[in-house]
Image 1 (cartoon, rainbow, N blue to C red):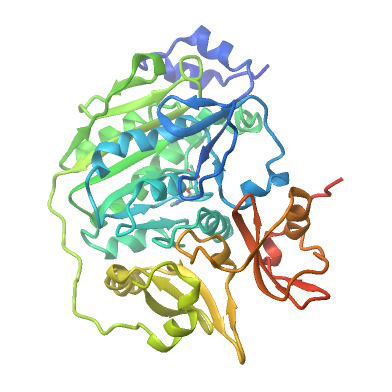
Image 2: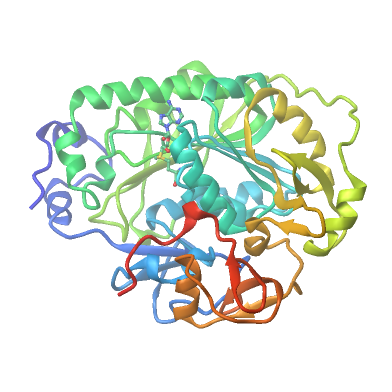
Length: 448
Ligand code: SAM
């Protein structure tokens, strides 16, 4: 049985909704497994599973499958996400409703749970910047966002401070802050040993710094979402009080069904947050609040710019795209990406301030006699629907994902599909086929 830190239990004594006995008992049970379906990649998945009440795409799984052995997971048809976190969608529903061309920043985004959820909520003319400061984690984020398949989700890897150059640029900023992690004790028992009061204080200081750094880039009237997976009031309501003391803000509240068991908690200076206790909610520990910025902000520099659209390349690569309303721009060495023309100005603004790792849908590169399509095209929901493909069995899909030889098949570039879901490219030469799945993506596990 998990022995919960005394210091944490002490800190929680006066927190609204806290019931010590029930809280301790809930920690004798293991954590739940849940997934969220990708509406951009419809497939029949988990038909028997129970719905997450606050997110119509969320499902609780009765057992935890080996996700690595499910090709639909690799195709980005769903994301494994803790159920409480999915409440972000409910909280932002009213904020996003009827809006288009929003600029949204997910500042602490890896591995991508909140970003994939945001991507599914935003319309195609809005732009999501998923940022992760730690490089190794940024590559996992990039992989997950590529799987999810939206070309209007770009990935950056910057320190929060770098965003302060983008005065008044974002409509919504999500800060899912690094924290002391007590909300995940049931998922990771080691986190219990690592917990300390000193670490809570350290995290609190870091949370304030992150918010201070990113605050200038939120526009006046814009919305900050602040979340942690910590129960400690110092990192939750305490941070809301810090925000209210330093800035002109007001709370954004949402409706709650009492059956969900989510607790609305008011910080001393009046800002409202939502608490998730595992004895009340079908999910792990979580805290989230939405705050409107009422103080003045600068305005982004919307200068005229010369388009970087390469029409010659567009003609060569257009067959890979769904529709024709695209701007094709160079990215990296010899490669090209397709972006929504409405986002070219954003590109001009963003690239002066931050390092863009992924911009739009990477199309690949021209070679001597043909176009070399990028892996992203096989996973992109904005790719052409009628590209040559080969539907394979689960066994063959797993062999492809292990980068094994696929045997003989028709000649040419083919997308390997499992249940209609793209997994990656092969180039078949008739007697053998080259597997173009990026090496770092391959399944390393023995298939048995
Ligand atoms: N939002 C993610 C999701 O839903 O999958 C989880 C984010 S996790 C709670 C916090 C993230 O903040 C981690 O990826 C971590 O690497 C990052 N981080 C750590 N220190 C940071 C800092 N000083 N500034 C910004 N982000 C930081």
